[in-house]
Image (cartoon, rainbow, N blue to C red; front, side, top):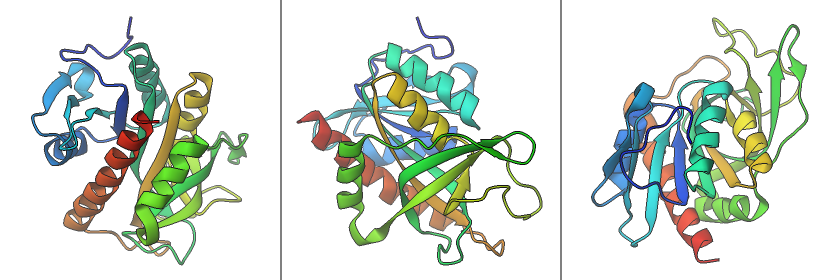
Amino acid sequence: MPVRLRPTAPIAAAAVLVGDPGRALMLAQELLEQPRMSNHARGLWGYSGRTPAGEELTIQATGIGGPSAAVVLADLAKLGVRRAVRIGTCTALAAELVPGTLLDVEEAHAWGGPGGREGAPVRPDPELARHLGETLGTEGRAGVVASLDVPHAGGAPAPVAAGDVADMQTAALLGLGGELDLAIAAVLIVTEGVKGERLSENAEAEAAKRAGAAAAAVLSTSSRG
């Protein structure tokens, strides 16, 4: 049985994963015709329903950080999820990545502990990632994410030696997805540039909607083989 989630509606085999419960609600209203709340335990809001294309889809909040996201993903796997796309936010580590960029994750590294020790690289499911890149088209940019145990403070450089962007959970999700034999990919919204410039809330919401539409299309395509 699930450890954290307490589903009140059926969970689909395909899921969009977001950190923020508010974003889960927004994407449920954007992507599903008649969304039903499928989880509210521990503030991890989840919604299930059909897309306009007639595909069943769950949109689930994972909370902040790798440990929370990993527990949620493990619960979703027990509930029948077999394919997932993470939609998250990140901070640019490369000057050319301006706020608003959609990063199609091709590799992730976990960084943590004193001095920022690097974990082994993990990669998304190749087929899901390929479809995601094709669907994003020119709007997306392939890149590498460094996932941190804790966020870097006060605009200081993230304690990593490699990576185009930094976040807090992509590496955990991709790594666990492989262990669970669950196909998973990720697209990240750059919300902060290297000089501390921030994406507005409205622009972030619009970017999340575009990423969500791409994720839903990819998950639908994957369900048909």
